[in-house]
Image 1 (spheres, rainbow, N blue to C red):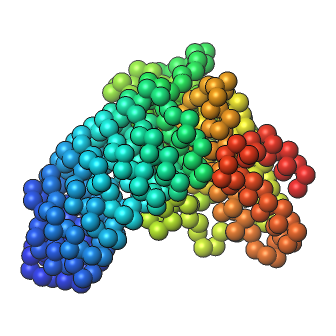
Image 2 (cartoon, one colour):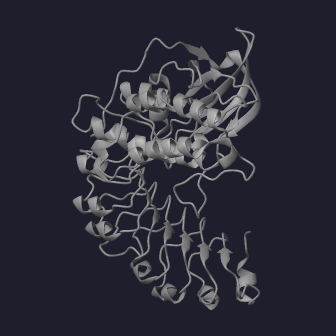
Image 3 (cartoon, rainbow, N blue to C red):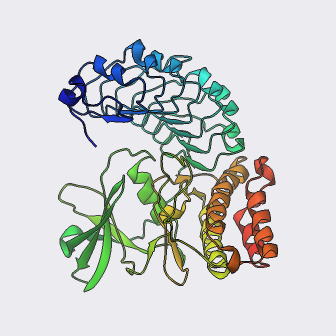
Length: 433
């Protein structure tokens, strides 16, 4: 709910836990401090702020702050002394400077996407609770070695930066599961299938919007020359929290054909706004999202509708399909980077389709770190299977079979990354279930 400055100044908001103001603010309203006894979430996105007073530390219960799309050029030092602050968002500002020792002690979710940061402080290594770190779309040239101390880091976005090297220690972090690192000088490029045909925009009529993601719009369209209904994704062209739309498009094409991938029919050309686009098969409406994106509370783990359940056979079919398509991707040097239930479509017979390549990155399958990169994604797979197993009622699976599943999940979670199975080995295990 959006509040007004008048409500704040008149005292109407005393006792509030969540405050959201977007009214062209140029200075931090002192009246916010009057909410010190209760305020937990402060959202001042879409204003013109460039600083925060040190008195923000008076907000003793503050857990979450958002300052997206403001005018900050430096990360505010005062936040380091906010005792309960665990989620900090400064997306799409002008931040160039992140000084040492500015992060709050309980930080577990940091969003600095789309700024102008060149260097990260060594003190980021002191963020022992950091789980989720979004740094895509900056100008970072290297990751400090101290970041290897972030042992609880699970999701990292470093796409679209100036990293000359993607350090090997990154892929040995014990809990890292979802990582995007494309669009850097040190990232690997692969040859894309140039035989994929391009078709003129004029040959299509857009009918209905099917969905909108960070990178673009997906619409149902009529393909006139083929007399067929298709889906078209038009890319926005801006950097997203995951990375660059061009990388998503390249990965979608390079992924190839698989029963658990949405078929790519061609590329668009001659778009009136010169935007890129992909033509895809239209998916039957019987397919629905397997899960929902993580909440603020769950942080890195998907959430599911209360009535969602699976049986033993459905779990096995989904597990095999996703392991199979993941094995194909990694054989082609593609790390999906966002292997989650909310990026999987499933129908009532447990056929499934893996989508959303927005966080995908290419890597050299012959490089020294290739072994570890695949096994980082294996941990994401383990999280997915654990989430689904928790949705199988006890009446649908005997304890011996459940123990077998739990053993596989434990293998995917091994803190020593090199000892985890790869996706081919996981498939072999599943064949014996």
